[in-house]
Length: 298
Length: 141
Image (cartoon, rainbow over all chains, first blue to last red):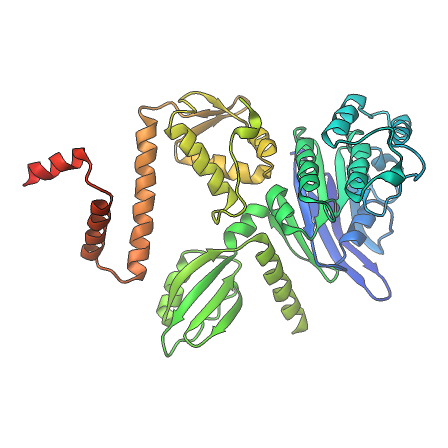
C-alpha cells in the first residue's frame, strides 16, 4: 500500500464566527475525492489548511508526505491548485502565462499543454481580459494540468460552467487518473458531478465532517422505504433509521444501513414494506445534513 | 476499438451506475460482441472512457467476476470468461432475475402462486405463441 496523498487528523481552527472542528480525512493515490457541503460549511477553509495557506490551531496535516504548512514550498511543486479566486494577469496573453508557468515548474509538459489548448478550444494569443468565465476556468485548469502535478486540488471547478464546458473539465479530471499515482480532491455542491466521478465522498457541514466513505457504500446503504402500517403500529427503535415522515397509515422511512432484514423487522412490528427506493447522492447529502443538525441540536 | 463508444451511462436511468455498466457488459457478451477469452478494457480505462469513477466500474467488474461472466488476471487484465454457450446462460440468468422480480411484486400484491402462473400464461398469450412452445404444448396434450 502506497502512502496517502492527503492525511488530515483532528485538525481544528477557530474563527470569530465559525469553527472548524476536528477534521480528519485521507486520500489515497489513484482516487478522486469529492468534498461536498452547503455554503459556509468549511470546504474552502479545509482546502486552504491542506494547501498551507492557513495555519490550523491544532492537528496533523500531511500532503504528499510533507508536513503542512512547514514544508509547503516542497509540497507545492507537486500540487496543482485551482480556485475561482485565482487571478491571471489581465493584459497578458494565455501564451505568456504558459511560458511563465513553464519557467517555474520543470515538470511542465508542452505537448500536453498544446493538446489541452485544442481540446478546450483556447487561443494562446488571446489576452486574459477577453476570456469568458468558462474560458477563464479552462485556462486556469490548463496552466495547472500541464504541470502534471501528483495532487490536484480544485475548489468548485465546475460552478458557473455551461454543460459543454463542464463535460470537458470532468473528462480532463478523469484523464488525470490514467496515472495511478495521482489523486484529485475537489469541492462542489453540484452533487451530479460528484456522484459520477468520485471514488470517495466526504460530507461537511457547519465545520464538521458528518460522513466520509466510498461512494458505492453511500449509494448502497441509504434507502427510502415506503411502509403501510397496521392500526397498532409502533415504529421499532432502530439505530439506522435516519428519518421518518408521513401521515395516516403510510409513512416513509429513510435508513443509512439498508439490509433485507428490515422487511422482517417491520413486518413483526405490524408494517408492510411497499417499496424500497434507492437515493441519489443529492438526497443522501440533504438527509445526512438534516440528521447531523438534528443530532447536534439535541 | 473506439473507447468512447464502449458503453453509455444515462443519468435519467433509475438503476445505479454500476448496474448499468454490468448490464451493458452482459449484453455485449450475450450477443457475442465481446467473445469468450477476449480481453476487455481495464477498470481504469473504462472509468476514464465513460467518465465514471474507478470504484463504480470496479464494483461492476467484481460482480461480473462472481457471476462468471468475466475473469481478471493479476497484471494481465480482464477477459470474457471461456465457457460453453455463455450467451444462453446469461440470457437464462437474466430471465431468472426478471421472474424473481415478478414474484416479489406478486407477493406484495398478495397473489398466490397459482394466480402468478395464470398471469404469466396470460402475458405469454398476449405476446403471441412461438412455434417451439406450440409443439411442447401439443405433446403434453
